[in-house]
Length: 262
Image (spheres, rainbow, N blue to C red):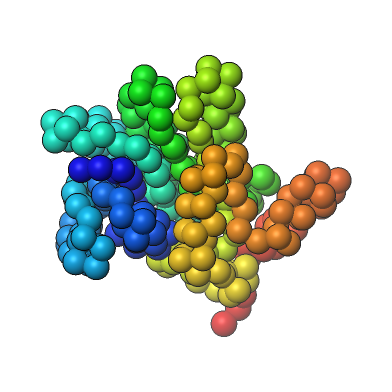
């Protein structure tokens, strides 16, 4: 396999579109997700349409052992990963003290721990060969606290911070490896149903997964630090949010996550 991208959460949404983008450029793929049948269908589509090689690794990243198993599978198959795309993640709606702990614990495992572990496993090889790129799917949620999605917003804040810090370490070491954080606004994917977000106002004007994937892929290839898919969100994050009183910001953030009555 050549010019390989490993994409987690590849069975749907942004991850699926990122896999399609990479295949359209002639790159081979390792696609990872829980649903094996969805991976096999994507593998068939990409191999038939673009003539690339695609390896499927069914894996649940809420399992703490999954990153090591994914890495060892690539090692045993002599697959050299050029692009690590940590896209898998999910959210959940409701007051933190009323939510099931098991769901939030799994969210932290997928959104943070598995992402960090995969990065730690694959990054040393990239540094050694002085070549590679990492794309971490974060969110504009990573720039503010998120009442009614407290844990999800906090996990994305971690990803935004972690990605930037690692990129600077690599830059100072002249490693020729970059890390990009993709920070979209609302996206029309299965994330909405899976996270119990139906009826949340902000998702009524959600952008397509394909458009977000294009922004993220281009930013990764260009070695950009942060990729935000809408100019209005860039303005909000950089020029409005920093100057708002904290309580006002929290109230506004909560209101965006409230569900409209049917």
